[in-house]
Length: 243
Picture: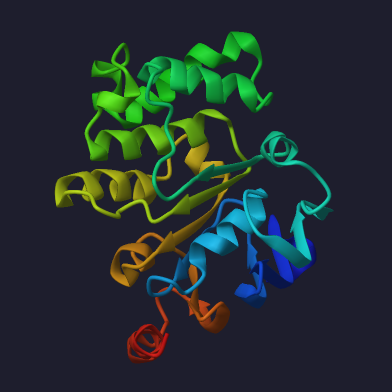
């Protein structure tokens, strides 16, 4: 995909934490309405790359463009208001708030929803995750791990993003919860039908099953990329082993 046609375009992006270079010269694209997998072993640099896009960590060099405009020149909240939603590893939900209040806060903070549209945004999330509707008045900190992950994804969706960053959505979850989350990504309804998604996963099988294209990251560098249905599984496995 030509970078001028992309929703998200990274060019020679590097991310450092002090003297440690977590991402080293990465270039990739995500198209409008496209799901792109970012694969790699633990420690490959996947989370650092997503945080660099959303402006939540590391010193960044290179280029990060969203619809042709740089994301490197603004504070984190400006990145969110320009249409980037990040469901981070570790969930980062606000435990003392209720499920509904977590969603309301995200819907209003993005400034991408008219006030009258917010109830409909919450209803969309509850239709994806009926368990969240059942728990809507419960403090988020009392949810199970799977329910917290659903809430983290729901908070991202309710902000009406153009670009959704999902970081290890299957990590530490029961198989039945993983299937529910990935069925949502396969169905691509509502908000998920129109936004681009960059999906970071250790599980190549899960991510490739819902993605059009994929990049494989090892030691902070892209070592392999291609269409999800054409990736050489042996090369992908080798990248994991040699990370």
